[in-house]
Length: 291
Image (cartoon, rainbow, N blue to C red):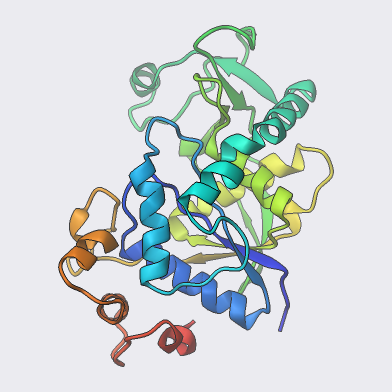
């Protein structure tokens, strides 16, 4: 059995945690236990428009309510704000972006979402600004990674070994710095995983494209070990109507369930039922045999 050093819970505080988030944490916990890894709590709060204090507090409330343990990271919302917010690591992100810019991997783009949708009905970026040579310091420009959409990208899957994929169209020339000047998710995630020493990344299958983008991005940075990490992309939990859960669907939020009088055993049981597990599940440990 391969041993890993560190994995992570990496929620984004842009809504209340729902059953799907907890399911991902359950898998992370059991894979960490199985592979002798520690768990880091990493909260991705760089999206300043969507992040709210109440959503940050919700993360801590629900980890406590569900009794989901972790080894490293903030112990409460105040500790997070003081010591672990991504705003505390801005210098790392800026340094990475400057290296990419120096190596001519980026270009400036002033396209709006509406303009992109006019050029491509699916909303895929067309590379319109690639050769316009817009200055990086122009106001209202994003920085995009100039990606080779035909390149084979290799990464290691926990169960299937080495896999190969190509970037999906939606991630054509993905953004690494937003128009507000702040680093975007693909870059911050890579830099954070490198900074903390994460070597096992557990995430939903909906983030398969992000894995490819991040491996590609990491290869363009200074020599690093990110592409040697192991990934596990788990199926997404769906509601009884076979719909993907979202943070805007309040009835599946843990906060809603708690306020409705549900106990942690009820929540674990609900997740087990929605996964189609016939055996009664009412605790974190009970999921172990199914991971």
